[in-house]
Amino acid sequence: MTAESTVASPVGQHGAPEGAVSVLGQRGHATGLRAPAGPGSRRPRPTTGALLWTVDGAAALAAALVVPVPHRQPLVLALLALGVLILNRRAALYDTSVVPGALDELPAVCGRIAIGWAAVVTLSPLRSLPLTVLAAAVAVHCAAACAGRAAVHGYRRRVLRRDPAPALVVGPLVTARQVAAALARQPECGVRPVGLVVDEPEALGDTDDEPGLPVLTSALQARRAVVQNGVATVLVVGAATRVEKAAVLRGLAAYGCVLWELEADLPSYGLGGSRAGSVQLAGFSRRLLGAAGGRARGAAAKRALDVTLSGALLVLAGPVLAVCALVLRVTDGPGVVFRQERIGKDGRPFTMLKLRTHRPASAHEAATRWSVANEQDMSRFCHFLRRTSLDELLQLWNVFRGDMSLVGPRPERPYFVAQFSQAYPGYPERHRMRTGITGLAQINGLRGDTSIEDRCRYDNAYIDNWSLWQDVCILLRTAAQVVRPTGS
Image 1 (cartoon, rainbow, N blue to C red):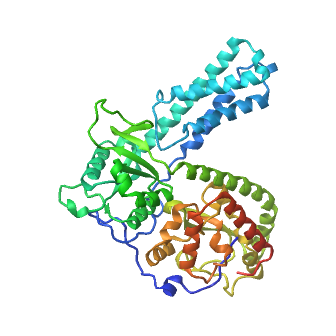
Image 2 (cartoon, helix red, strand yellow; image 1 turned 90 degrees about the vertical axis):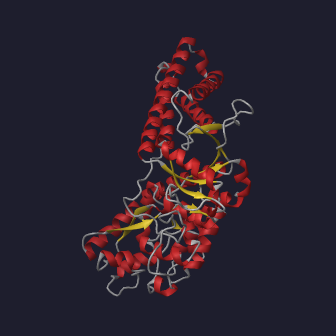
Image 3 (cartoon, rainbow, N blue to C red; image 1 turned 45 degrees about the vertical axis):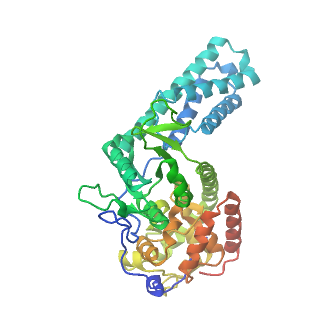
């Protein structure tokens, strides 16, 4: 866990400029970097992948109720549910980048349910059940799964129609603008282009009748646009663009963006057909490009580690937190929990929790003063909380909620994110991943009055080379530092 020491404002220390400029200009010019959006400027999107998992689990439970009580073996039925979930996962049925219709995925869903039941019946005592009972259980399972998934997809479709997902279009300027205009004419497709990544914007120029989408011509501008707008979808127009823009696309994929190749040419009318694995988006054939699957699986494993450990630690640390809160209440008065806005993954703000060790003079001071760890008016107990990092324990709740991760770049306040983003080109890239309680920079001594540039380099190196084992190692080294604290 981390603690920071008192230093002068890092803006003055490192010479960061006073303001922040938007990546996306009014007429499509890429300029500077704007700070991540503040509260209310961008609504958080629902995570429907978890809803689909829940629906499939509930469908298996509904099917289990059809099985007569004497044959209803919880372990066997749990294995059935797990097997179907795994089959669905391998078939990408939890991919939320596509919103299929209720009938589109019916064969895939029902087929995997049938395979799961066939395997369980063959290898378990359920094979003694009458065929009519088994058929009824399979039918209930299929009906419940399809109905539940249709409800989730309908909900997702309504959300995207109301608030389409931001996307970048990569390709030749003329074609990219045509694709963006077509998507803008069909908001029900759920995608809203927010920028065009091209090589030569001068080829067409800005005219009064052009839609005016921002035109980005470098990998850095594209990555900044991803952070600023919360972009998770990149549409690559044509196979030639995939080759020409390979370096840019690798960088966007490293940010967690899902890459789709879009067929913007005229339809072949059966002469060659569309490629396997393609779906349609506003009438364009769309095929998922590689490089996102491994990262998605890694993100799921990282989240599983976060939920498991943060939940267990919250239970274990509950008595300690209660005692600390009680002492703070007695010695320093009411208001033992300190809440502060920080910037998290994709530039989204969240409220970070800590035990209060200092009362800022004003909200402005809390938002813009770098650190108050050595203020003379802090009590001895508050100094103790800072020195031992016990004041950070409440952030386990942020981790459990999904605002943060156990391991990742430390979150910062919006004011300083704006300053550092202008002063250090790599700073916005830290927001590719959930921020953390501890990180690679912290275990290497970069806390308090240390170089922001060095922290930035360590944080981005951590993200670029992420592995679950690296997270475990960082947590172990953090635990060792907490056991033998060296002070703030």
